Image 1 (cartoon, rainbow, N blue to C red):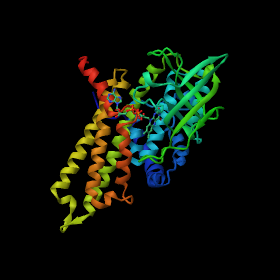
Image 2 (spheres, protein in one colour):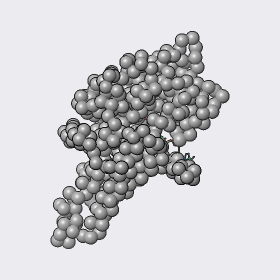
Image 3 (cartoon, rainbow, N blue to C red):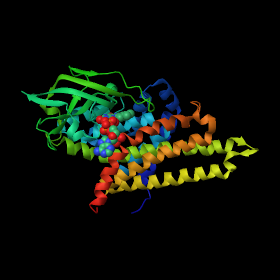
Image 4 (spheres, rainbow, N blue to C red):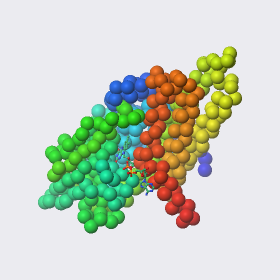
Amino acid sequence: MNFDLNDEQNTWKKSVHKFVDEVVKPKAREVDENEEFNWDAVRKGGPVGLLGLNIPEEYGGSNVDMVSCVLALEEIGWGCGSTALSFTAHNGLGTAPIALYGTDELKKKWLPLVAEGKNKLGSLALTEPDAGSDIQGGVTTRAEKQGDEWVINGAKMWCTNAGIAEYIITLVRTDPKGGSKSLSMILVPTDAKGLTISPPEKKMGLRGSPAYGMTYDNVRVPLGNLVGVEGRGLQQTLATLDSGRIIIGAISLGLAQAALEESVKYAHDRKAFGQSIGEFQAIQFKLANMATEIELARNLLYKAAWLKDQGRPFSKEAAMAKLYASEMAERVCYDAIQIHGGNGYSRAYPVERMYRDARLMTIGEGTSEILRLVIGRHVFAGK
Ligand SMILES: Cc1cc2nc3c(=O)[nH]c(=O)nc-3n(C[C@H](O)[C@H](O)[C@H](O)COP(=O)(O)OP(=O)(O)OC[C@H]3O[C@@H](n4cnc5c(N)ncnc54)[C@H](O)[C@@H]3O)c2cc1C
């Protein structure tokens, strides 16, 4: 396997970096402080191709390979965790299922609309108040066929972007008997009658990326809003999450890289006992550990993405990459605060925000515990 990026990937990385440096990073503190989503990044990110990462060109997307998706979210994560999370919830969760499984009619209607960067996004609701990790057994939101419509009743929780999106792809139970063939994905426009979206959750970090709870009270949508195959919602979700996990790992990597850069800068500037704190071996050892762990995570993530691009199995590698990268980001951001001393605990320095933002990464799109189950199953089966 060759880790060299090709010319196209290198050019892409540079253009995303420039965009993030100019449009995303300068607003990272403001969106966190004010709990405000960065719409400017959507307007300007559309033309760069950042809202159509998984959307075929014929529907207005950039449809880049998985390594390029990792590069993009690593860069956006480097600039702002909040913006990165909302962009990935839009791309990987909100548009990928339509692009992969949707009818041509659904693709034509929704994908060009949300790829352009005209203040329009997508979202995916899997989690419910009483079910997150246990989607198969726990989802109780129900959809029944009545005439030429689905009628949906239930509640969802923690849906990133829902209140600022055009639609919510909703995981519902279509067969009350249960089992692995009882779930389906249905696209629900956010202006559907009977859909109530609560105010955004008050979160610890990622405060510029709004997440919402919703209730569905006899929400009616056409039968044609089924995304993919009836009864295949679980399998479609698991496939969506395999790729999504690599991307959450990429955001973790970007956050850690930014925390390291801030730490190196601070270690040069801050003086104690008559010298820069970076001259102390204790500080250099921390920087060494941080840089080594970042490099390891980067290798795991690029490899998992590369496997996907080769059409090879990548589920175990995606789980490993996300597990390692997300836990690594927490350790790196912890050390970044330590290197900053008291200033690291202040909102005036960005490492405080990075630490809060990184905390989600071991939870969203598969907790560390669930990922260890996934990896353990592969290892135990000798795969
Ligand atoms: C900021 C944010 C954004 C989010 N965005 C979205 C979104 O856009 N769409 C969406 O659908 N969801 C979203 N989520 C939800 C997220 O995916 C879930 O929180 C996550 O999957 C965990 O589910 P849970 O919170 O119900 O925890 P639970 O499943 O209740 O788990 C609680 C604890 O028990 C552990 N646990 C559970 N089962 C097992 C087991 N079998 N073995 C060992 N340990 C176990 C878990 O690892 C965890 O530590 C978001 C969450 C947050 C915080």
